[in-house]
Length: 136
Image (cartoon, rainbow, N blue to C red):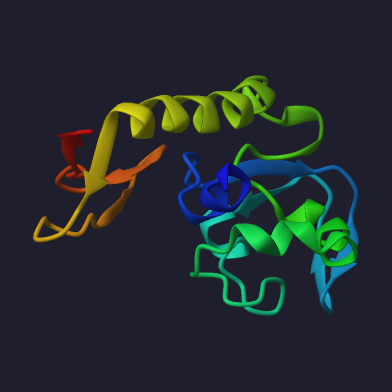
């Protein structure tokens, strides 16, 4: 469940990388030392990479052949040598904290404002995220 939630709301809005070698990418020449900007938000919602990219579907990760080819597109923490050093911890921490919360509370967002994304250095909700916590 945590793995499918991460692409729907990546914390980093974009990432810039220096292109080390001059190459042709999709028919366009990219000069050496060009700055390339990658948007995890866009990549993780691209319908040529993901089926139903805007839907929460934790079962998509159980189809291993499909999941294996999409590992490079799973970017909530970036990838490669500059991957977020806290990525592993976050992937363990998120389901643990969620489990602890739902043990004690019923969560609801009915009749509450829907969060609107706001992109800065990190992605956040424009006016906050509203949840109702009712004790169990």
